[in-house]
Amino acid sequence: MNFIFLIIISFLFTQDNSFNRWNLEKLYSNQLKNKQINSQNHKNIIPSNNPIVFEEYIVGPGDEFFISFSVNDIVFSDYIVISQLNDIVIPSIGMINLENLSLKESNEKIKSIFAKKYTDSNLDITLTNVRKFYINIFGTNSGPTKILTNPLDKVSDVYEKIIKQINIKEDHNLTYRNILLKRKSVYYNIDLLEYKRLGTGNNPQLLEGDEIYLKNYTKYIDIYGGINSPGRYEFKENEKLADFIDVCGGYKNDIETEKIKISRFTKNKELPSEIIVNIDNLDLFINEYDHIIIPEKDFSKKMVFINGEVKIPGYYFLEENMTVYELILKAGGYTDSANKNKIIINNDILGDVKDLELARINLIPPQNRSLSEISYLQSRSLIEKGSIISNNKEYTSEILAYNLNVDDKVYIPVLINYVEVIGAIEYPGRYPFIDGQSIADYIRSAGGKTNKSRGNIYIVNSFNQKIKVSGKFTEIQNGETIFVETKENFNTWNKLKESMSLIGQLATLIAVIQSASN
View 1 (cartoon, rainbow, N blue to C red):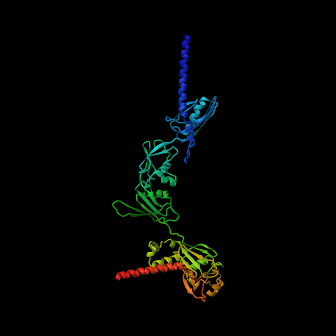
View 2: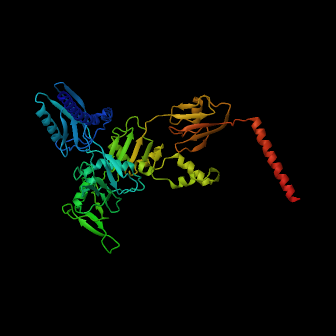
View 3: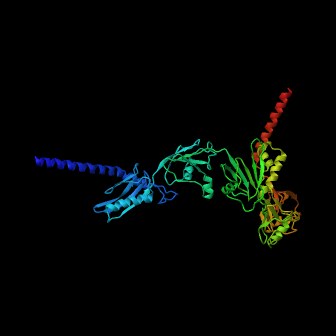
């Protein structure tokens, strides 16, 4: 009987230990049963721009540690995630609560408990992945109501995520200077422009339960002139002019410090009043819809440019009443290979001015254009807008006396002595220019006329004018073209078809007239 009683007692004791061991193993198993999932999450960690501060980072549910130790016959190396109750369970150590502890305090607490149980062994622990949680977003018309974030993200990080998801047409004036962060019933003002431009201001990292409140702003301030980032900005209450100028990038180098102007609307007045302030008196508060002008000193550098066959090509300061010839002298004069009879002047400012007449004519179908409109198109195609081109010695001399304008670009071409002979010529092409030589001499040098010549000879000058001349003409200029007119290619069959078509049209016309007469 006593023997049976001892067996029963032994069985119950064994069962109780098994039950306790089963509970601990179950708890540990539940914590580690997603080992493969945790490992995969570890591989998918997205690096953060915000570093972890060991003494400040507060651990919480979802943070993942990697813990490794070897003691006696126990070897452990694995990932452990903090539970929703801020607990972790380490085999052979037990459950440890980490609520409201920093990362440093958590490490110290875990190692302290381990050292009390195992004095001759070391424990290694590190944070491998941070937790993720949702925060609520309010105030947008098209943006998300929740954003997935983590304790390393700041308000600016979440704001960037929101911007990527909004419809710009519905939230085109989304606030960036008057953001509200609600944390445990306390509201904090966030100015991301100040943080971005100056690196100051409030931009905290986020915690569980945080809420962000946005809106589309309607109040603004304009600032222009001698400021590095001019434009329209969202209005912020209780901001001084000096602070606002800092947020806008500060002053440019040369400003009129005594003439800063603020146009300000006041109550019951339709027109704004003007306030003049100086740089030493910027403590006044700005108002909504203020229009601020910071005058700049006029130190604009007016330049001209010369290139081509001059000794020192490049940019030069435009002096008062400076002529083209004076610019050439400043550039060291002509080179030995310069063509002093030619010059080209362009101006990009004038070239960018739209030719409204040309645009108007281009809208008209070609068959409906008048002769003057066709002539305008042809004339405009010969020269670029804002340009001066001369291939004539006398005209070039006149141009050298012209006064230059800002942004003029002067080009002196290289001297190439040639005359081009084309058309009904045996050997058309380029031939050396010889002053005083006649047209007939050039044609003779080119092998003479072919049997396709009609006998007419033309000079095409630098103005693209075609002038009929005789073979005795000797006033040809360097670079001009001699054109010997060719006979038209005659196709008998095509001419016959055209003639028959014309006869048919005449016959039809005669028949119509006779029918009308009858």
